[in-house]
Image 1: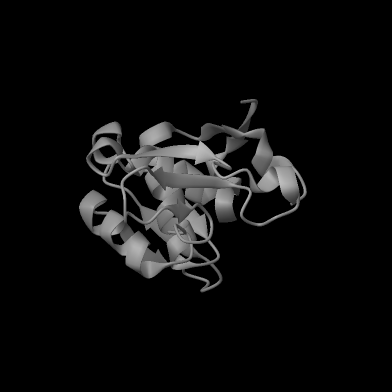
Image 2 (image 1 turned 120 degrees about the vertical axis):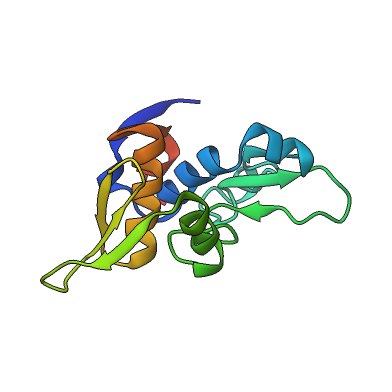
Length: 145
């Protein structure tokens, strides 16, 4: 898989959700759930290259276990029910900027990130505190979808 290095402060949408998934879904957690992070495991791209389902999944091989499409089913940059537990676990502080236009999130290690929404700021702070200012993401996220 080809990757590109992107600034964490520029990540949004499925690219940010993918970065969170690769850090938050540790190997141990994936094994317990009998899951892995895969690109297009069903082959949607073969039949419909522009299909919104032809993306990265947290894919479970366990019977009756839900698989999650990253950026849709798994979207902590938009969904509080997924961002909140990460914020609590990592103890990331959150506040509106003084001018009220952006949100600011501060990780335990002092990493500060900003975003248009609280969830984007939180997830950028989480990724940057774990990975640094840049992260290699699949080239897929830089293409027009």
